[in-house]
Image 1 (cartoon, rainbow over the protein chains, first blue to last red):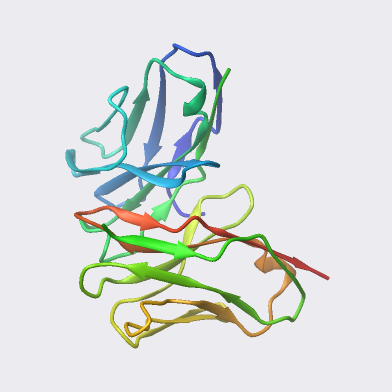
Image 2 (cartoon, helix red, strand yellow; image 1 turned 30 degrees about the vertical axis):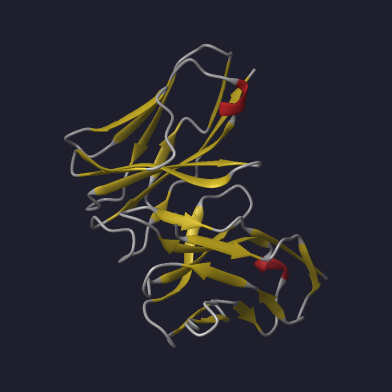
Length: 115
Length: 111
């Protein structure tokens, strides 16, 4: 158990809908990262928050947004969903800001299926 | 930009066989290098890391040596077990705070 929790585990929805994925980082970790894992694109970094502020953006679509709240939990919002958004979405956390320095701890993921 | 290339899987081995999963990278300077492992149905977890050239990372019988001459960070284990069946990802920090992963190599170990 990494200490990172993600809800829900599974999500099935229809095209055009909007969903929210939730992540609670390990106790004491200030950075939260979101990743998308799909068969065709592999594991892709989406976005990072550190202590409530956006710190880095990766391959995140404009239809997707995220935020980190004062209690450090984070939410990833996916809107106008398309079939191609079906994937595993992972949240990870770390103590510091830089991904290059320390270990990231991954949650178990949310499997999103868009029908 | 920074990138990681891993050998394609799946790799199928018998228990107690020797394992090598190749990883090469392209990066500016000498970043830290990581191997992450993803067991079935779980998130990724750090397996080992090396923070500078010639460092050897090791954990759970796995080893990888940071070779700047060949820009490689190959993962090895002398004797694999069925419980090692998983997907292995080589990774490095990319531009800014981005962590760049290889495509992953699936390992299946059979009795």
